Image (cartoon, rainbow, N blue to C red; front, top):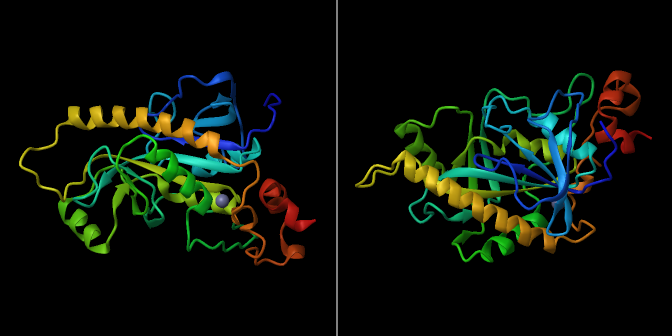
Amino acid sequence: MPPVSPVTVGVIGGSGLYQIEGMDATTEVEVSTPFGTPSDRIIVGELAGVRVAFLPRHGRGHRISPTEVNARANIYALKSLGVQRVISVSAVGSMREEIRPLDLVVPDQIVDRTVARPRTFFGEGIVVHVGMAEPYCPELRELLIRAAEMTGRTVHPVGTYLCIEGPQFSTRAESRIYRQWGVDVIGMTAMPEARLAREAEVCYGTLALVTDYDVWHQSEEPVSVEQVIANLERNVDAAKEILRHLLTMLSAERRCSCGSALASSIVTAPDRIPPEARQRLELLIGKYLR
Ligand SMILES: [Zn+2]
């Protein structure tokens, strides 16, 4: 990996967001991690005067399915570049009538229904239980809401994101049951990203872009694929605008507690942590073991 001066803000782009036009002085960085290879080379550059590391979650050309996304490698790689805050951009379906296509949602909660994804950096000799009561960084959420409101679009400042495994969409019966759970939007990528960001002591916020209603919604006219793609493209344009607004609002120092999530979460006695685990996890836990 060529030396890159530290970058503290990361953006993980979802469906439709594979590059950000207007990033200046970009370099592409290939990062290898103890957890494998990230989704793509990371693009480091300047956006709105702020250094940003951008990673397309599904790879350029959309080659990686939600199940196949190596979220551990993605979060670890961003952390290794110095990233302290990650903004995740995700296309979602709406689970409520009043959340319409092209609306923006800044979720505050997540229900995880994924079943086939590694969800922790730890294990194999080291046990860590991080708190997930509030899965999103409150500071980043507040700024995302403010930045989203600047677009003039309808912004829903709270919401529960239901993350399903996919790659198929839900059956109508599943979609109806999920609605009874009280969720607001449905997608395939917030987990395990949010868990891993917390374990890496990285602030995490999601900008959820509504492309359509999920299948529970039986409108008079069926939704066309063209319409969904057109909505996706308009949403991606909004996301780029929101990112620019957000970047100018970020303070240099974090005022949240995300940066000390592991302070009282490592359960294993330090002298019992195997040397291999110490080495593999040095970037994440080193400061607590010295
Ligand atoms: Zn935070």
